[in-house]
Amino acid sequence: METAYPASRFNAIDRLTALFSRLPGLGKKSAGRLVYHILDTDPSYARALGEELLAFHRAVKRCSVCGSYTESDPCSVCTDPSREPVLCVVERAQDVRVIEESREFRGRFHVLGGVIAPLEGINPENLSIGELVVRVRRERIREVILAMNPTVEGDTTALYIRKILKDTEVETTRLASGLPVGGDLEYADRLTLSRSFRGRVRM
Amino acid sequence: METAYPASRFNAIDRLTALFSRLPGLGKKSAGRLVYHILDTDPSYARALGEELLAFHRAVKRCSVCGSYTESDPCSVCTDPSREPVLCVVERAQDVRVIEESREFRGRFHVLGGVIAPLEGINPENLSIGELVVRVRRERIREVILAMNPTVEGDTTALYIRKILKDTEVETTRLASGLPVGGDLEYADRLTLSRSFRGRVRM
Image (cartoon, rainbow over all chains, first blue to last red; front, side, top):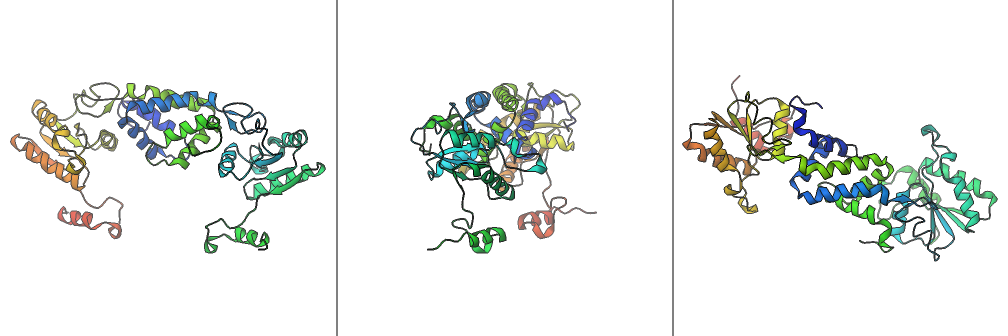
């Protein structure tokens, strides 16, 4: 509390503002704006949002097989017999949704839970790499697509997993990296440009 | 729902995303980012935010005297006998807080509930102008400070109220408008500059 007048006056407003401002991208000012918007809105909105939040962590779990967010465990991808024995390995659970919405992929997923970043204390044993190896064998996976972000950590993690999977029969691939569709050479950074040259395809 | 796969899969995530994206400044993407952040955060956060929201509209009311947001009615300003008989008239309830936090003003408030904007269907009778006149007489107000925003509608409303209050003894003033402190002449718009000239003060 930075204010001098009786704290009781704006208690509820302050508490809600403080809670909102803990969300990423919301400072104290923009959180306050949301709170006053909610005050000016029909109370049914705050009620709906409140009830949804109270039930949220009970409704959404992690799939015990692939680690993605789901409301039923195992998730609908893992229990879908039509899914091909191809594993797409992603960093975070939310990446699954982006790929699912692209409808580019008809295989299964494996959420690593991060990327190797020793400086941040994230080592291979903190990621679900052991589970990945078990799944590759048990589900007779024929290809593992490494879909980590094209960052230093993502590339390091991809190299590490390729090494780990060397003993298995599985084919290991990495998502193509290069110029984004609709992008402009002029605005491409040096690394992206370099990758797009190295990964150029015959046409 | 724009997605093709079973709706049940992301039901709770979609509902919460849809609710968040109704808040000002939050599109579907940024709302989704908040939802996944909440999923990755300790459940106690979602619980605290949910409970706060459920209780919010019951906790925060409008003061029946001045119209500002309060948890006890009448509000702590209206019941404070040390407040001077000066009324600061503001557009919206949240403006009260900004002025209170500036500690520049030791009088009372009156929330208009908007400004006159005929094109948007807001006419004088939709604002608490009648109540203002009653308060000026009943509370023996000696000055009314019109603190509406320095916009066309704010100025129109200020002129209208000055006219209405002409029959009373009360002095009517308007907040000074001009260059913001720390601002730069180079970036001032023409209207602001023009006001700062017209309102110049001897030194």
